[in-house]
Image (cartoon, rainbow, N blue to C red; front, side):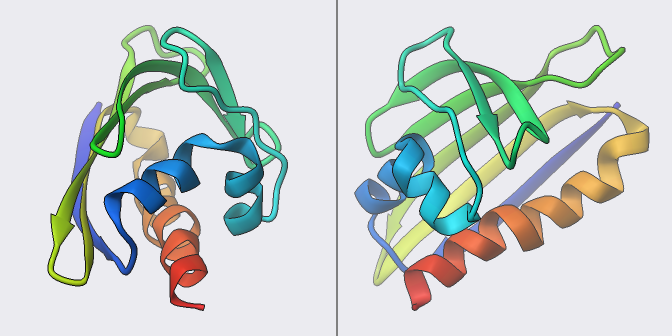
Length: 126
């Protein structure tokens, strides 16, 4: 199991990013795919037509999102923590993803950079 930690700069306020990550209709705008999401702790979520599924654990409005991502056949929970830090002209997003199965690590790291935060950054830059 591996951990992934990275900072991303997004040209939007923490509030705008929080909404983009928690409102299904907004998620669909920047991913181009249907999404199921709720800010209720212990609710299930699904993004990118089910290629990302898990459980929402904790929310702090405009500041933090904590989720458990599911991986078939891996008993240890894989936890994603996204923290939003206001910056001069946008937001520094701190991502920490723990307990990533070794076989999934490279694809996940690329997915965070290109699909997840790459798409989110593109959405706010346009």
